[in-house]
Length: 400
Image (cartoon, rainbow, N blue to C red):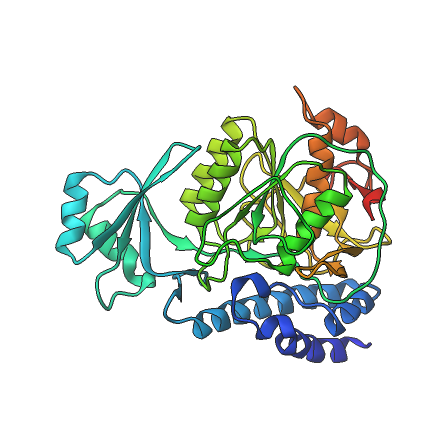
C-alpha cells in the first residue's frame, strides 16, 4: 500500500467498521478486521506515514466521540474539551452551605450526595440549570462558588475489541492474589469469585470484559472480582461508576486491579486511584488505541498507576497504541486469543488485552516489593533500558 492510498483509505476503514457503527460505549474501541490488516501493512512503511497515521487516528477519535454523543443525546454531551460526559450533571467536592446556596440561586439542583465506599470519598452530584450546556458550566460555577473543585462525570471507553473465532492454549503457574477488573461483565463459562454492577442493567455480559477475564485465567490468576461499570447504559463507564467500582474491589480484597478503559483526567477518578493506592492496591491500566497523537490516557497517566502498552506476535509496538504521561511495561496486545461473551475463542487486538496480562505478572510477584521482581522478569525491547515505546520491557510473553 503506498502512502497516498493509506492516507485516503484509513479514515474510511475506521469510520465504516462495525465498531465505529456501535453507539454504546462498550463497543466503540478501535476496530479490527480490514483495519487490522491495514495496520499490519503500514507498520512496514516509513516513519512519515506513521506520523500521518497518528494524526488520522486522532481525527477519527474526535469523530467517534462526537458520533457517540450524537447517537445518545438524552444521556451524553461533550465537554468544552471534547470529551463525552453524563448530560447535565456535574460532581462537586467539599460543597459548603454558602457555595450550595449560591449554586441553587443560579438554578443548580442537588441530585444526590455520593460516598465512594472503601475509598472514603464524598461528592455531590448537581444538575445544571435548564438550558445550560456542560461547556458553559465553568463560568456559572465560578460565579456562584469561586474556587470549588468540580468535574463533569466523564465516561470512559474500553480499549480493544474481539472480532473472530479461533483456538488457543496456555500453560502457566497458578496465581493466588485476587485481581480486580473494572469493565463490563464476563459471559458464558467465565465464572468469577465476586461481581457487582455499577450502571443501569449491570451486570451485563460483554465481549470486552469476557476477553479480559479469560486472559487473566489463562495467565494463571485463580481469584477474579469484576465491577461492571457499563451494564447496558449508554452513559455507562462514568467516572463515578469507575470510582465506586474501584472502592468495591478494594473492599473485596483485590490487591491488583486492571483497568482497560481510557478517557480524560477527572478529579473524582484521580482521588479514587490515589485512595486505592494508599491502601496498597496496584492499579494497572491500558494506554488506549487512539495513536500517539491522542491526548494522554487516564487512568494510565496518573502517578503510580502501571501504564501498559501492547505488542504483536513479533514484539512490534502496536501502531495504534496511545500514550500516557509515563510508560511502565508492554505485554501481548495482538496475535492473541481470548473468550467472547458466548464462550467462543476469538482473536484479540488492542492495548486493553495487554493490561490484564501485565496485571497477572504483577499479581504473581505481590509481596513487600513487587517491582524488582517484575522488572527482572521484563524482557528488554527496542532501545536498551527503559524507553517510551516499551517501557521497562515485555511481560507475559509466554501468555500468548
